[in-house]
Length: 475
Image 1 (cartoon, rainbow, N blue to C red):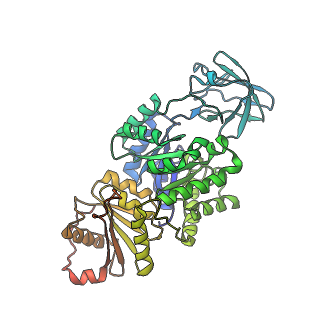
Image 2: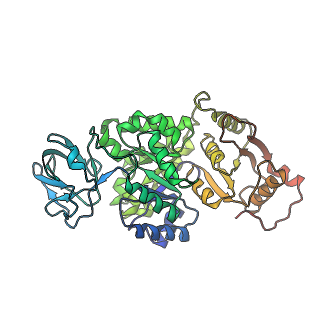
Image 3: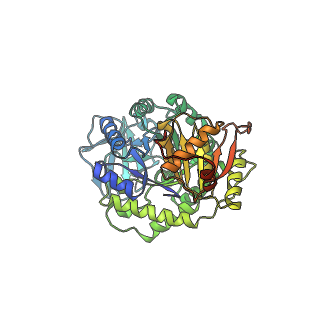
């Protein structure tokens, strides 16, 4: 599928082979796991299942980071407006009398009169008093406080470390089970991303920086520059800033990421009504369409596919909406001044506009060239060839990209190039009707000597080369 990718969260409604295959057929490009829910054992088994069932689908693991949540509760308390509910940092409680939370210093950071929100802002409270580890809240509305729901305290510095012990444990776990991307919550600085990258200490997993509070908005440009992918988590963003500003912030983030050539994910309530209903609302269809038109590389489903009644239908619906929007998408203007790498993107665009180019074939060892081609704004299919299967799988998050793993090759070697072109023909990924651009770019924007952009008429190539259909090194 060209255009924006679809990320589906895997949960009880979808973690079986039959549904996973149906999700992939319906348009799922990336599988997401929410590290705030379920056990390490569950996530490890689910990753194993994904690798066995849909091996080409990259996996994104969201780790809790600094996000505060209620713990798993034996009793989920319901309350009426004006009633008192007690949060506590004493984790021995089960929810029947007091609701435990996962940040042991929360009671030290709050004071009477402070507003507290839960469950993406659907529940709101005011602090009445603090007694020891107990936080007494007065409910502003009727509701039920459930297990593993987020707790937000906008405007209050909760004094949490950039990287928590839980982060370190989860990153080690993520590396051990071989996920492709790690989602980091409440990113507010380049420093935060660099600290996580040092812990990863490897080419993968790549870092998805979640922009979801005022600090993230304030330091947006440095976050975009430092991260591999940007996620707009509209649930926490609405609570931590202002729900009235969410759409404006979304446009701002998509614009900044687009100028930098960084892929973006728009998340939260894209098809929320389809958790219970087989059809979306018109507002949801409009929301998805506008996200794609504004430049979103991927749109994400959460509860819709994790616990919803119609997971396959939700993926099919969002995939179709995103594809229709992408077909109407005019290529965005690219600023050469802000990012030197835009020279390559502009060159790709110029070739695509001047010639009947049908596909981009990218030869890459790191994925940099793949991102440049995918974010060039041409709307053309991208066939990305790399030699490391752990890296190439992750490229499938990028819009319009199909990744292929090859044996070791050199971009400078004409014989390697010809071998790859022949292999792509053998696999019916390109044919004599195609006119392609071969792309390879250096990540060091100051050193442009290694960049390659070359047009190739496949019909002419076939005429010039003795061609026999033999086994290819491309897998």
